[in-house]
Picture 1: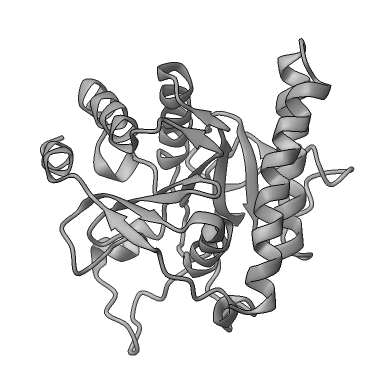
Picture 2: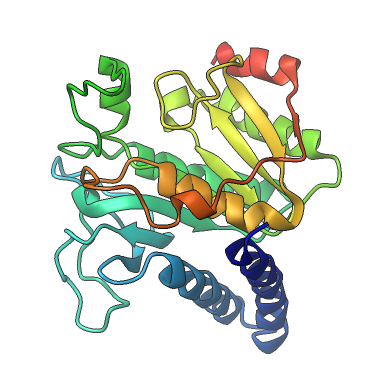
Length: 274
């Protein structure tokens, strides 16, 4: 356990405390509560993706004229133009300069919040970048045509702090939504974070989230108080909108492993049939 991981344990607890404080301070004004929570997550991300990365909020536009719903936290690549005057409200956010889209839904324990977050992700997945953060021909890695096509899509994360005690219930509600709405695999979320508990990975073949030794589907990786570290680890492993010239400074410090992993074959079987 290195000092960075110990620090991140504290950061994870502080995020949850800040969310609770936001609920109290903004009581009676839902938008105020939401804004305060977004500030907490944005400030955390700014620490570990410092300038020239930037964190934005809003709709994302691709070069084909498609526009997403408003997303809470958008990690902008250093190549994204400065289409803002105050480093917060962007006039326009371009898909080709977006590395990750993060939707903040603290309480994933109601049908309304779960469905809303999945819909937000769908609108981002409908966007297409002109290029991805991987090389078409890479002599060091096996890059399939399918994986290269996936890299044109923006990775999507849903960040929460609590969900049902029975984790399977969350998965059941997600897969039911996807079945009813016929949401194809490529339009589904990549990672769900339940801070201080677990990551839910949506493992898909030829995608940037793929547990190669297992079947495709949902996998719950329990990290406990290292969940925020695992979240950062995956963010730094995702392909960016521009090809990296070197690996992240954080990569060697964020090698964390889950205490256990769970999956539900019946749910994964249903996912495979959508």
